Length: 208
Ligand code: MLT
Image 1: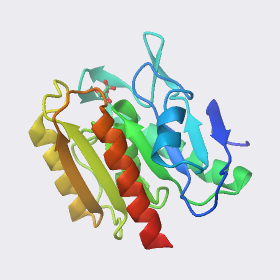
Image 2: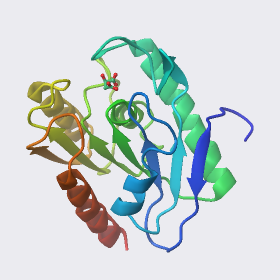
Image 3: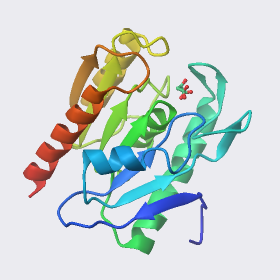
């Protein structure tokens, strides 16, 4: 790759017809973390899984934060551009269509930022425990892109008002948002996997 290097894993599709997945890990994760989740959600889809380039006490992330839940928004913008460039280059290199992001926690937050800042990059997104990534996002045009937002009812990091605001923000920008609040905390549950798998099945059926 010529431009923005991300350490990453790529697994080619083993069956046609499913959109590629862009897997975005949480704080302290890496490019291997969500491969299993990706395979469960959409068996046979191509998987593109970068490692976040920011280190917080040695833990990879996708952008800097000032404190838990308080983001360095200049860095969010910069890193979203960088990730958008990486996806564009990877699409060319691997010959894949625009991916659906599957992001958890910090990875969900950069996916939300990508939707708002670079709406052309993603075909849709599954946002697991996401927050509003920018206090003053630009007016994005998401043209009916599908977004699944799964929040945890007892998530100590993401207040209910914050995820509701993100759902509203993405809907106002034109995304078709499905927002479900699960009986869970910040960690993922079996219900996340089942709902994500069913949702992506419907997205595929619509695109077919
Ligand atoms: C973030 O920094 O993106 C959120 O606080 C979630 C996380 O801990 O990664």
